[in-house]
Length: 174
Image (cartoon, rainbow, N blue to C red; front, side, top):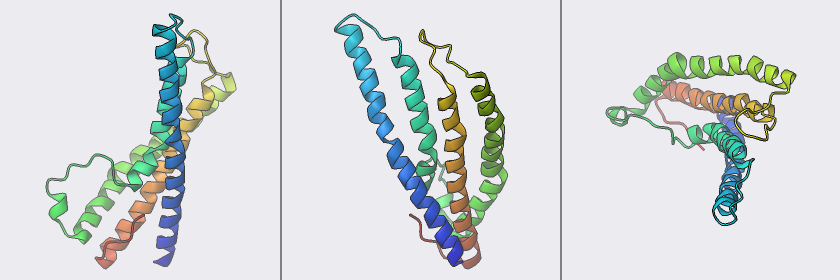
């Protein structure tokens, strides 16, 4: 069980670094939008690039922060009865949820994102949303990367839940 502890803590540390690094994208996102507001309303000179940059930065922040959010237990959870259960029962419920919903959904999405992103790179895809039509394949590459970090964090939590289900003792979390 010590291997489970080390693997889970390594994944936690990885998502901690990724999440905190991705949080800096919020500053860039805010700076771009602030620049657009000033350029548009003060100088009457709107930009062509802020729309594309804002959805790429915002999407990247969201995608790269998924694993971090799961690690911090900040995802939405309906907790009417769950908190009243014993740690072992909660762990068993979580295991079932991971096996029935989390891994199939996110694993399937990851599987289908790989050829989607590869095709985007092959064709040198550009955004058709804005006037300047920036390349979009680097942004699309963030999609499977973010999902991979989420899947890793799900694995770490799943391993902890299995250990809790076996021992009845809640496991250390990050």
